Image (cartoon, rainbow, N blue to C red):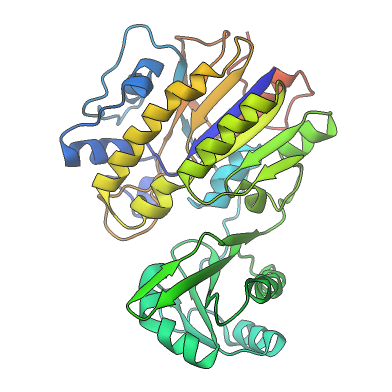
Length: 393
């Protein structure tokens, strides 16, 4: 008996009721992506009931090319985030059962973004100076400062609209081990603010042709209480994560992790785990939607990524057993047609393949933590503190 929660990172399905508080009125990741290319072709997601979700929302808009079907193969619904924020950690932690009432600290975008005391302490401990110190796109700031970083062996430090302290360094100039050690130093210093993530952003190449490598690591805050991963593991359930989720949950409650940084590797890892394990919980993140296309405001690339993932779903379904549970959702939105480069505050889709909910409307759920509560129902462990199971009678 297995449960799989598949997070399509940033695939939102329409502005949330509180979108105005985040400057996100008009954000519709799926709908605007579809409209920008003249319609999406997602036959598997359509059969699952993806097109049935927008009519459940008071401000729902149809997804061009993905119509509602009469007999969807999954339970279908939407979830509204209740935590403060729209970042990766907040969304994933809520899926895993937590409610983040006070959002993480956001640094100001202009130089200097980081307080003098934080930078001074970091430079003193790591014995290297910092350059950058502003909000920026990672690829842009590396092109801007990469040559200087290589020349003087400094750290490029920068933030974004998320609660992050990011550190970039050329792998041929500063070894990965030293970069990771520096991130651990920053992680400890950032806890007092608090900052959601410290991120290692290694790169290689030459001026004018720099490229970030796959050796990114996220140093997240410790969750303030047990997540569903901790609780399942404590009850003897074998827990597995794929993608960056080991970092997001500070490596807690995880029996086995496969750390990968792109959709293709995550898909291969998921198939391999399904072929090897007949029971347990698999928590997987497909990051490319967000990292490669949402933040870079590339709707065509976003659409292609959706269609490639739709094709993969056939292989996934072929490996499911009748007693398995599959949940497909997202952690926030990131409308690639929207202004700026930030995540967007949106409802997220909920598609659940299980005999107790096939073809049923799961409604609009108040809180992503309904997934954690449903996992508790599925594995027959004591209820989580929050949420309503969509597997309950």
